[in-house]
Amino acid sequence: EDDSDYCIRNIKIEHGTYIFDLETPDLKLEGVEFNKPGRHNLLNGLVAFAMAMQAGPPPHRLAEALATFKGVQRRFSYQIKNDDFIYIDDYAHHPTEINAVFEAVSEMHPNKKVLAIFQPHLFSRTRDFANEFAKSLSRFENMLLLDIYPAREEPITGVDSEWLLGKMTNGNRKLISKEQILSEIKNQNPEILITMGAGDIGLEVVKIKKEMSYAS
Image 1: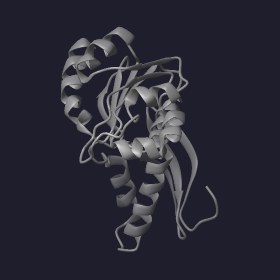
Image 2: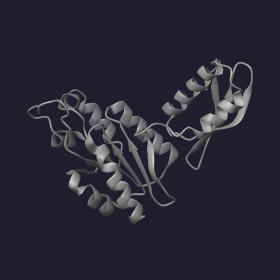
Image 3: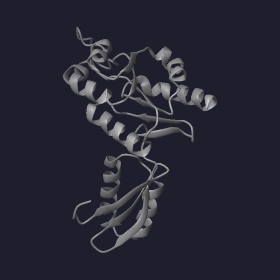
């Protein structure tokens, strides 16, 4: 919202959708819609629009394309989106990405009970960014932490999810196994559920979606 050649102005949020005016060097498009939550995604959409403009398609067609863009797999992907329950899955595996997920869900779905589930990825990354991970994960009021997904690495002495959990400050935080995921979700009964991580937590998404679609 500065004086760049391409700007997004007058942002509103309605039913989890951004609605805004898009200004180009030559014209202004009003009431443009974009459905991917998060200001980082909105900026990505603006850059894609600006690049596409150089190829010559009619601007109104590009605006229509922004409105229909569904995003990519495991990037703030809505698995369930009902009035009383929302399930979001994201590939976030770095503190900056976790912060982006928190800010997006807080902006799009304020004042909701959120339960986040995170699977750390790599012992070395967890060690190197432990304090940053603890800070970003502590922003979620309710947090379930899984064991570290090792991928290509061998364990590092003293670096595990229990150690990371001890650095976090949110009151409702807990270390669980993957086998406990469904029961913990049902026990906590969140309005919004988020799963995050770059390990095999992605394999749990279908199970969670199936069970919670039935439950909700």
